[in-house]
Every structure is written in C-alpha cells, then in structure tokens.
Length: 175
Image 1 (cartoon, rainbow, N blue to C red):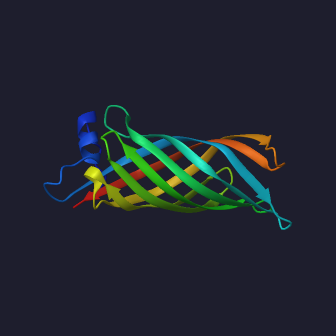
Image 2: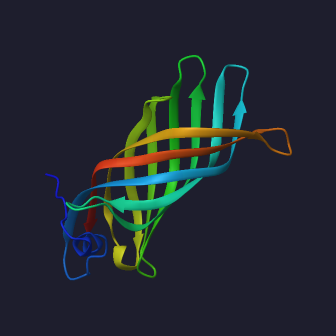
C-alpha cells in the first residue's frame, strides 16, 4: 500500500520520525543525478566497466509537488556488454538529510539494458542520527539520460553522466 504524503512537513516528518515508537512510511521518490569524472575501461571481449561517483538531490513525492528532502551520493561500478547492451551495476550510497547528523547508508544492485535503465533493489544498510536503526528501501530504476565523453591525462575515457534514479515506492522503517 503506497502512501502519498500531502504537505511537505509530513514528508520531512516521514524522513525524520522521532524515536518515540516504531513507524513505517512509504512514498515515491526520485533523484536527478550527475556523475562527473567517471572512467570507462573496455576489455578485449566487449565488456566496458564504468566507475565513478554520482550525486544529486533526493525528492519525495507529495500530493501537491515534489519536495527536496536531502542529498544522495553513490560510488558505483557499471558493467556494459557492447554486443548485447546488457548492463549490470552496483553502488554504495549515502543519503544526507536536512537535519544535522541525519544520514542513511544503502547498497544498490541492478540489471538492465542500455537505454532502458538498470533496475534493482536499493537497500538501507545503516542509519545515523534520527535514522538510527532504520531499515527499508525499494525497487529503483536508474536511467542515464545523457553522456558526455572526454579523455583523461592517462588516456582513459572519461564520461559525465546525467541520469535519474526513481522509486515508485520507497519504504523507510524506524524502530
């Protein structure tokens, strides 16, 4: 059951519930992401490995308008098969909330096809501050919207990636 939170204050409350008792909140979320300084290395078998760091604001969906709730930063590795365009990725992420010390850590693994997105589970692994003991996450789709290529000083290919992470239903459980 998905719960769309009406006012922005309710969304922020969902992301910073007091320690008074257990709660679970579910909402849609998205993050426009930028990856700068990524490196791509191709092997002889047509597999390209792209590594880097993405970051962008995380928005929670409400009945009236999306509300920015913090910053999402992920270190990632994406493997792309040039013949089938299959992609597989993994990431370790941190979410920084608006409150001092409000932080979540998560892992993300995905599979998909280039151009259609990489889909997988985003799982909260730790929480700090008001998120202490948090669990949850949700099925996420990561799609790259634009790529800009360059060449690094060591002659490796660099990319700036612009993309979007989207959760139909993000669940946050607090003890």
